[in-house]
Amino acid sequence: MPVTGPGRRTTLLAAAASATTFGPAAASGAEASLAQLAWEKGILFGTMATLDLLEESPILLPEAITRDARIVVPGLELKWDKLRPAPDRFDFSRAEAMLAFAERQGLPSKGHTLVWHEALPRWFNLSPTRDEAQALLRTHISTVGRHFAGRLHSWDVVNEVIQPHEGHPQGLRNTPFLRALGPDYIEEAFELAAAADPRAIRVLNEFNLEMDNSYQEARRRAMLALLERLVRRGAPIDALGIQAHLVPRQAPFRPEIFRRFLRDVASLGLRIQFTELDIQDRFLPADIGQRDAMAATAIGEVLAVALAEPAVDLVTLWGLSDRGSYMSRIPDLQRRDGKPQRPHLYDEAFLRKPAWHAVAQAFRAAPQRSMRPTR
Image 1 (cartoon, helix red, strand yellow):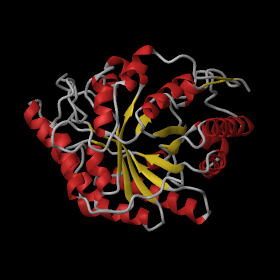
Image 2 (image 1 turned 120 degrees about the vertical axis):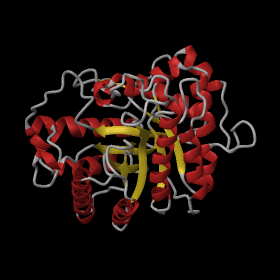
Image 3 (image 1 turned 60 degrees about the vertical axis):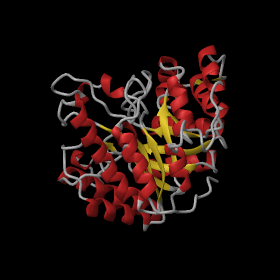
């Protein structure tokens, strides 16, 4: 099966990468960076980035990443639609450019994602036969996993598989893979990932697990049941990834409920990653001062609970700056007053917002833990 190489990197990205140097005390002034504050407590902290975002902010974004991150997550470049222009052809050029950006700064990368029902190529048949789906899944995970073997800290092996309200008896999401292969495709995906890249930490990644309402409670129950089945059957899963796209005022946050869920996951012998942390402020006031203060409170409350648990050893943001945020492109996430969301720790000018300081305080208050090996 033909595989195209990395190709020529843009001069823009090469210049941005070479202009930055990572170090534990890279923050300007006396104040420690988020990366350093997290690292001191045994937690790996980082952010998602994409080639498009780096090209839009070629100086400020690399500087912020270098200052505040110890790991980079390519947000788009490792998804099926970017890697597989045809069923029998892979193109790793954009993914390689993202890994090169991180590597030139001395940062590892996290893989996102090997199996997801969205971001599929146009050629993908949404109603595949069992044989078709199995061949596609096995080829994809084996090829991509082997290509990047030994270069990634972790992989989100399977992404967003829980959706109890759709009626599946195990609470699983109705995807082309589930329809064609049944529930066992999740376990097989982890087995394939382990065979292709034994050193990478293997993660099941999911959203809407933090808040106290009946919808998210059903999702927590279904997730725990799935994790229990996978562990019981010996699947090579290492961690639960909690996306943590927080939506203040959509539902209440009850620390005791979320704490119990995290401890139930940890009791299975799994670690926990917070993989896509940001704040949807669409239900918060229009006034920016009020909005930012409430967003900071929300992210601080969740992290205070999360970071108190020893099983939590990684936190990554789904973007550092409001400039170019993905939320501006999703109609369902827009504010009713038409004002742009402010979902990240830096504003469009790359100035720190109250949420940055809330995250910093959460790391300062977190108990010390030993950094686990990354295989």
